[in-house]
Image 1 (tube, helix red, strand yellow):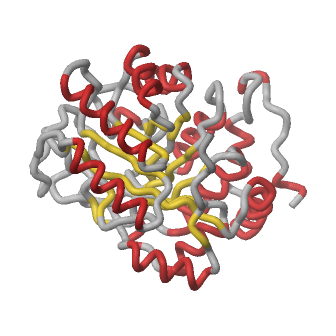
Image 2 (cartoon, rainbow, N blue to C red; image 1 turned 120 degrees about the vertical axis):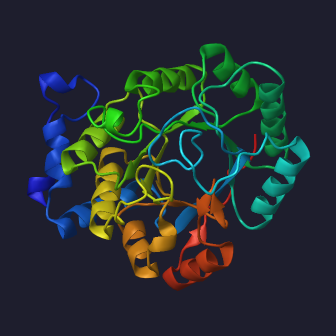
Length: 331
């Protein structure tokens, strides 16, 4: 695999990570060689027999003012998703308790907001974070854009991770979303990092982007000021009423290239096989684990789109000899 070595970063790439040409060389490598190298990197950094199980709950659904072309929660589109208000704390903690009992170690809470606003709703979310932590789970939120003060308050409440995906390349971004820009995303990531919260940041494959766009996304992730601790790789789930409803399912080979390249570029990260698993066979998911994915979202829904049930994942894990990652011991 001599030809798969990443060269020293070029002057244009900056001091922190590989150049875009480096990333392209990895991404376009012969697939079996790429997966083989990614598997070796994975085994050096992680226990390949362990996969983290996460659960993502929509705590406030629909009515979002953003116009993300993939999202059925946008108020700009007529979709099957009905808007519902922010859940009460007890209902969220009941769901978190069930997730823990089903084997999850991370509980993620997502609200269909453009940005966090100070006030009663945010105070309720802070109470949810505190409650999830008392259950012994990692707490993650995805709430839209944050300012510095809000990120600090989430950290004080005990938040472990904040998800804020870049979705795609900077160059393709305005083909999918026009109500915010790429720098808005990067600014929130900087606030999260400055607060001492770990960063969960990845993208979506299958929105009509090119390989060059996928390479650009991976290049951006690898060149953030500090590497993200978690990288979700999502396959687009087309939903009726959204602008991307007619997109064909992305093929597994593209998902493998994304996962394997992310694993090599970000060896310490949890690479999350996220949306789109209901359309993947067990064999396709097994290839993704081989290529370096070591986290999944379990449960019947991923925010508002279908997701494999816990029982199906248990059966797959048993077949593959995979065990759920156990929680880290407390302080």
